[in-house]
Image 1 (cartoon, one colour):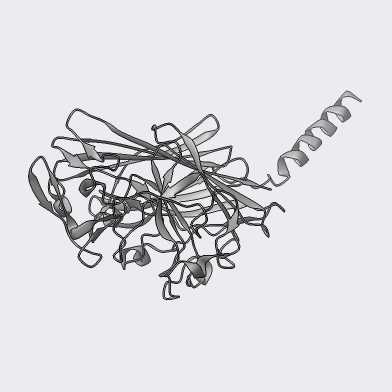
Image 2 (image 1 turned 135 degrees about the horizontal axis):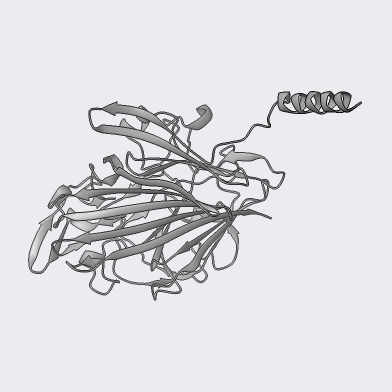
Length: 370
């Protein structure tokens, strides 16, 4: 009898061990996209316990992919981007890129600092945009560390921007850290130090589409925690003023769809807002809700400004994830930042970084459903 019981137990144990194990997704994985000598471009994938997944490459420190659940639990990508490195290399409107050295525009592609005039590379008519034609979005970053901590996964990247790169002074050491949390947050931490006085304004240029990139963004409801904008001239350079948004199509102090009044804004939205709290504290700057999917995206920042861009210049020539053509108004940007052209506007918050100082900035995109 004893032998029969032992045999039965061994058989049961064998049957259990033969059952297929449930499929699991590795929280962190990476693949080599392209390699040449010591320069290796990788694509790193992070997946949290909720099934949210993001992908980051060290080429341009680009956030290439963000998949989040909708109200039915369906996980879909909600950012514009490409499936191949060659598409990023061939040029694009800054999809998901880390922008440096200076996010947004500097008028006349020059500024004066400590009585020295610095001439920058112009790539937006006579102005410089997002650091210049060979800005951070086209540079290879080192992958310093990739690790998983309790409730979070982290990717830290860095590079040294040499003195006078694109015309900017100082050898600049930059670190960009992406963190995916189990609270469905993408945290982006920026740090930098310089050996010479310079100007700096780092940001992320992701284009979001909470429909899962199936429709335009015109039905998205937007709230901006900002009461004024920095109006611009015809070349999108700020005039130096602040203008109240009340009773204008720029007023998103209460929820409005992005398309509700866009016809009243020539060319569509592409404007910097002054966030209400400019003390450098970490605050809620914007909230977007997409009714069909139920997805909500909240943007938190330590920066004094946020640029709302409605994807005005997308024209269908870029084909992204899943073969989707990115047409006009197919993605929106909420770029946390200091104000455009601040180096030439002494009344704007300063973007000067001095030797011995440490630049820090934090942006968080948090996703949920309603």
